[in-house]
Length: 184
Image (cartoon, rainbow, N blue to C red; front, side, top):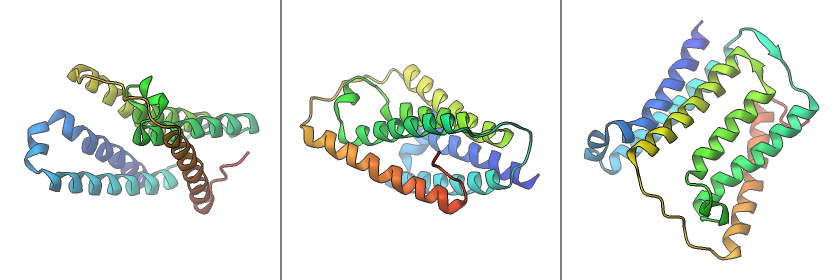
């Protein structure tokens, strides 16, 4: 039972830390740069809670990994990480996608739901997917204007691709270290 409490507390803390700027902007703005540190700390604590809770949470299991689903998951993960890297480098795709980080995050969550057919995964990855969808809805309602970035040199595209490959390898190694086989 404690694992479920930790998992859900982590999800709520993650969501709260991210929504703080959107739902209580004056409160967040009063803290200035100190607020960024608080948010970063809350996010780190939320990730620890989610990982510890997820690893200990047990419940119904509906389907398992198959080589096909693992392959689809891994391709989606490459695209998700590319979107995240592209948002920092402002590559070509950021001229087409308004929120590449949140889009990548939603793809990440869906990819994990494909290969994890148990209740803990539905709560964790489904909860994070719900947060990302809600974040996009809030951003749209706030009506923040979007100006696509100007075209950038091919060097930025290459940087995003290299960053994607490096991060994918590191993340797969971390999964392996935690006891989860990320390869098909």
